[in-house]
Image 1 (tube, rainbow, N blue to C red):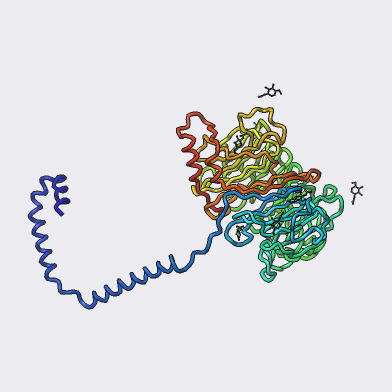
Image 2: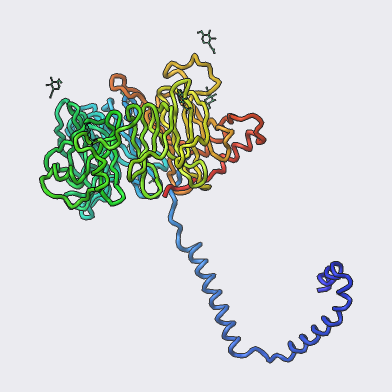
Length: 551
Ligand SMILES: *[C@@H]1O[C@H](CO)[C@@H](O)[C@H](O)[C@H]1NC(C)=O
Ligand SMILES: *[C@@H]1O[C@H](CO)[C@@H](O)[C@H](O)[C@H]1NC(C)=O
Ligand SMILES: *[C@@H]1O[C@H](CO)[C@@H](O)[C@H](O)[C@H]1NC(C)=O
Ligand SMILES: *[C@@H]1O[C@H](CO)[C@@H](O)[C@H](O)[C@H]1NC(C)=O
Ligand SMILES: *[C@@H]1O[C@H](CO)[C@@H](O)[C@H](O)[C@H]1NC(C)=O
Ligand SMILES: *[C@@H]1O[C@H](CO)[C@@H](O)[C@H](O)[C@H]1NC(C)=O
Ligand SMILES: *[C@@H]1O[C@H](CO)[C@@H](O)[C@H](O)[C@H]1NC(C)=O
Ligand SMILES: *[C@@H]1O[C@H](CO)[C@@H](O)[C@H](O)[C@H]1NC(C)=O
């Protein structure tokens, strides 16, 4: 009491002299009123009892929650795990799903096994394939133990996982594998058991175009159906299969165009579905309603978009006739109202409005040989990562998706066999980016494939002048992903390495590294001179990055 008054006296030395007597008077009055108050009534005793009772209940609940009810046990994740197959061949397929329902994403991949002495529960012959055949394996993301693996195709296959299944089928999600040679089967994502299995019967000269598309449920069985596009003699045909039984619906229907792999299913603003595919120098399309009616011979309840029907040339089925150079990739990107389309041709990248296909921006000249990826450079603003050029002339460019403006660019020589870049959202609503390349100061004499290691670089937009070289790998990388194995923790690099040619089977490895564990031993590459931070401070900032699950 005296202390605070002294302090006040120092601040207001004059005023205080006048006030002191008044305050003393007030205090005396208060003391008198305190003396006059009657002893605690029954009501306030009740209140006290209620207060202590509720306090006790609270403490009891805290006690029960923290000590008696056991916490759900979190499976311990290993920082690194590896899985090896001798005498095998790897295929470019990698998917992550929570297979064993432990809330940690698990990894699915394909390999062709030449060594029949490995102890599998099933052999190629059990599934009607000759040995060697292609296996699909699901491994635990936590520790790399095999959850299930089974023969799935004779050779290379198109795979699509997480295809919803009808509620009464017993399985909630499936992986569908379409073998290039005669098999078409669906396995339960969670157990690896066969859901259905049919021989596929495309002719000898028919090539199957990737990907396997999921189209609206045509046979009303509660599961999306599957559209397989094939190409024969410069004609693309569509085959529709029931998603729950794998039975073909109707007959194959011609799309009336010649086209290439890389189709997408586009939904226009009025809810009409169109299959879009690259066809030479333009974008071709076909309404799913039209295809259904052609295939089944019956009217379909799906819609057509009158605006799109006007845009579609009825004879050539072309939608967007003026692209400079052959279209290499077609992809959906987030747009203002719905999804927009990015068209990557041999000479330019072009963003098209998802509704009227008018170009929003064109980025040229660009020589993009790999499918771009998306990420965030500025918070919550989508950006596009493109690799311009190859070999010693390769440049990494980050473009603002809204305007096509270059946000960041860096020359990063690459190798022919480098995997594509990757990105992962971070808690600050930007993304961490991962690029493969050659160490930039390495002499150019090392460029024969297999000799120079592939270096993995990490980049974060808050440190635009720095690349972090996380690791280097000498083996041939077949597939690569950076994923969040556990929500908002555990960012991991997943690498599938091994030979790809069946003529030379060898060691196939599946490896997981925790990104954070790679940072302490990483090398800091300063792109701009005179950065104020020490290498250790930069590594610490990368270690502290927190990741965010994609919404
Ligand atoms: C097959 O695999 C086993 C164990 O993984 C190994 O010991 C054996 O040498 C392999 N056989 C061939 C022919 O590579
Ligand atoms: C074979 O199975 C045993 C026990 O199930 C396991 O310990 C061993 O690692 C397996 N070998 C291979 C090559 O998968
Ligand atoms: C690996 O993790 C799974 C959970 O993902 C667990 O069930 C299994 O027991 C673990 N295996 C080993 C060998 O730690
Ligand atoms: C494949 O095409 C070649 C030439 O184009 C033809 O001679 C052959 O008969 C075709 N094979 C089949 C199975 O259609
Ligand atoms: C449709 O395409 C054909 C062949 O490419 C062309 O001759 C025709 O002029 C096009 N029609 C329209 C309306 O653009
Ligand atoms: C892309 O690369 C090509 C060839 O390497 C070069 O001519 C072109 O200028 C580059 N484009 C941009 C925008 O940097
Ligand atoms: C590359 O190799 C050649 C001879 O093989 C040598 O003369 C040259 O110095 C090498 N370049 C570098 C950068 O080491
Ligand atoms: C590759 O990485 C290892 C450590 O991970 C490091 O010791 C080695 O120097 C690196 N090699 C090159 C060529 O950078």
